[in-house]
Figure 1 (cartoon, rainbow, N blue to C red):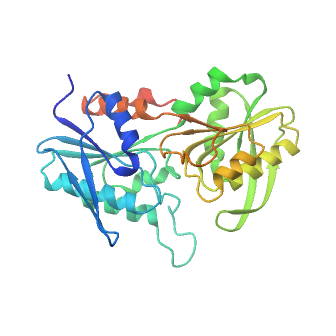
Figure 2: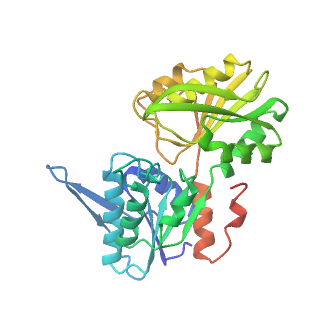
Figure 3: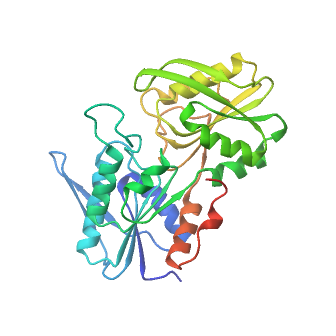
Length: 315
């Protein structure tokens, strides 16, 4: 028997994931109807009472921006329907790459998104592998920041020999993450130093470290166009690596990403289902690990006021 004080809802972008999280939690998924108008405007309707309930709303905010707006509308609908508390489960938080003012006259998009979610009525955020850890501080409500390593590390330990394993980061920004993986597994690490002149295009890349004879795992939080991973895989093989795989939490996979991964030197791309794959694209090399049980377990701990510390292998 599920807890009747909890209502789990999902936006249209994460409907399947929301169903799996609800199943893991042990509650039915509530019905949210999205009505689209001919001019592109849309509205959402929660098709059951949420008065006095703890409402959990599952929605990753990947492109298009309508997914973020839909989440905000569902939150507003729940607030106006007298929900007791609103928890947003956002496995992938979009706009997180805009976490600082790194050029004149640019927005800090991540902070703006945090402000909008708080203003809409979100009282708690549960997310995974933010592009920058400090984004947690952009919110004025509690943020439970989960890590893909909780899923990836057991998979790597069970399926691969650590004797020749090496962890690498495809850019210097991921050094902390790669070092945490390498330290946990007790293996060496390498670093790729890349330079860009424009977004989504790598101009040059250099390797720091010895990968000769190693089974390399490139670790990152996001795979967008796939260009960095493909170039890093080629670089590893050029320097004597035995094989190259990639571990990325969020499969954004925009533009030519699917084709690049399929044609790249990567043996495998290991991702989560924080963002659904495009089944019309080639993805034979892509292996998906589900996040539903992790989020379901964390939700159970939160509603029962239990610690979620056991859900973290590394930070």
